[in-house]
Length: 154
Image (cartoon, rainbow, N blue to C red; front, side, top):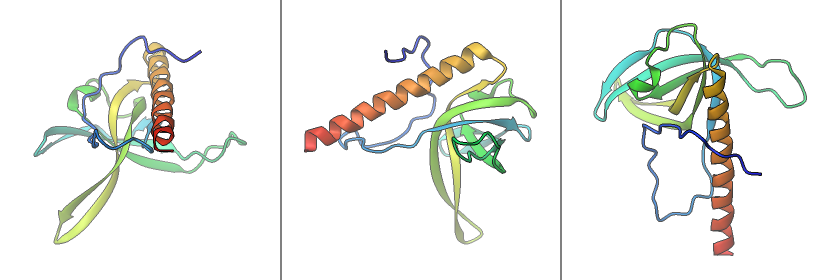
């Protein structure tokens, strides 16, 4: 039985892609970690963007329960997604990984960030469970769309 989404996750940042191109691969990030510093808000040409630094553990393998090395993950989101989030909160973040390029000091710099679609506190079991169900449904739906695109070409 396919998982059902009972409460829609608010998607506040648009993920741009050509509607005419078949979706054959995609990026999905589901990260859990602790907020390492107070969230910040920065102004961009698109409007205000919230940024937070999440400290997590790297995934090692399915065969071991040993945690991997600690890693830092930069999360960007619309400010309303981080309302009430404070340093030390443990969060579950669902989004897409993106690479952002910009000029700084006469050179081009690249940053890898997670563009959050939804952020929930791990302590909120009901919302956490809904977010995981949504992520699984999204994966299932994208897998079917990708398979359908390949079948149509073949």
